[in-house]
Length: 316
Image: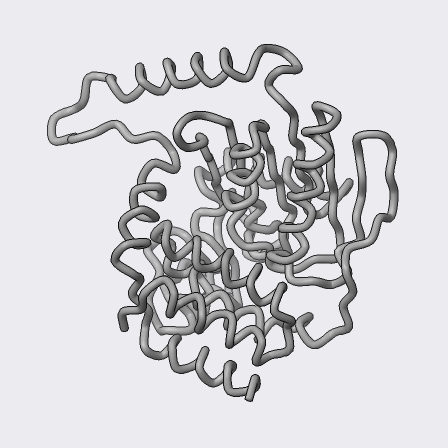
């Protein structure tokens, strides 16, 4: 099915209101997943709202973020069992406010679930003129090299760098396949690519449902494994960690943006191999998709659309 941005937003907000979220939280959730859809990530788009409703922690009591510990430029929040997309939105606003005022801020959040695309948050920080680093220690879904059981999370890490006209955003998971995409494919019966997952007996599989009972693999073998373990080590301090600082702690913001733009220009001017039309930088495709799909609207599987309509019925 094809939906305009306005219709997709209305559907998402109605669905979240239908399962009990107030207008503000429904807007935060929908804006997050709609931005993912506009950036070309269908699996992190409107289908993710179904994941919210189905999450085992959704029906447990929740409360707004509250400060557990505060020391100068650092703060640790109890996320109140909120959806991570809500909790990290407020945490990102807090890190932006603190880093803008002090030049540097460190914000940690525990007691959240399912935070969505890390790129969403570091882009917020970068558009505020900050360098942002966001790391997550996710629930176990990934086996170590040679292992047959999930013991590490997909453990993404993202970076946002202020630049004109759009920030440089780098967002990667440490698994060979993303957990949200796995859930999306399991929902619709779409097979996985080879060599990214194991079934519950530790055998390679392309069956998304079997992989959900088994494990994903780290990307790049031992390198992705090492990076995932590093994110887990950070997660011992805080499950969700956000570092932000102003470039003018070390150099002026204008000089920083200019020198970064010059480096990007050099990268894009790299001589290309045969058959390559363009050297792209991370996030560039997503920005182009966002501009195009904002005009044209998004496609959504009818099964996803109908399931969201069913959630929205609760609002009546």
